[in-house]
Image (cartoon, rainbow, N blue to C red; front, side, top):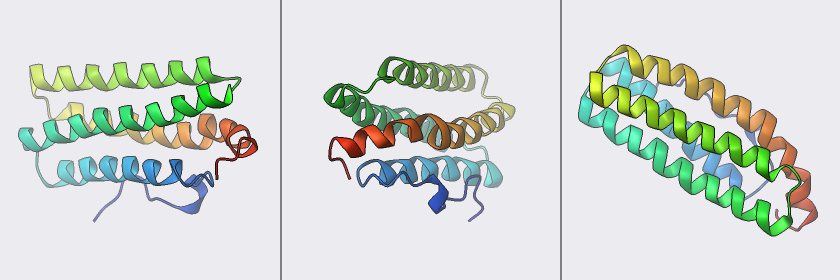
Length: 137
């Protein structure tokens, strides 16, 4: 299977609860990439849009629950980045539903590849020390 993002140890944060969630999200992105390589089946793409939204919501709620629990200093800024992601994905999904453009999923792939790698390697790394200090392994 071709992958847009190859999961590697560099994406691991050392958090048993968070790392598998990140890996699953990367897997959903890679499945979208594979579907785009093979076809543009609208039903399958709509399913992946839903997974991107639903699983990201689940993942974000996990992080945000810990932000509150540990009084993470950058929780407001980090939560804003989650909200921006959700809004952008909703925009992509609506555009695709309304127009059905085959170009749109490729724009989505670009966005997802950049956002998730940047988010995991940048924003998420910032909370690791806080989470570890509060006993999250």
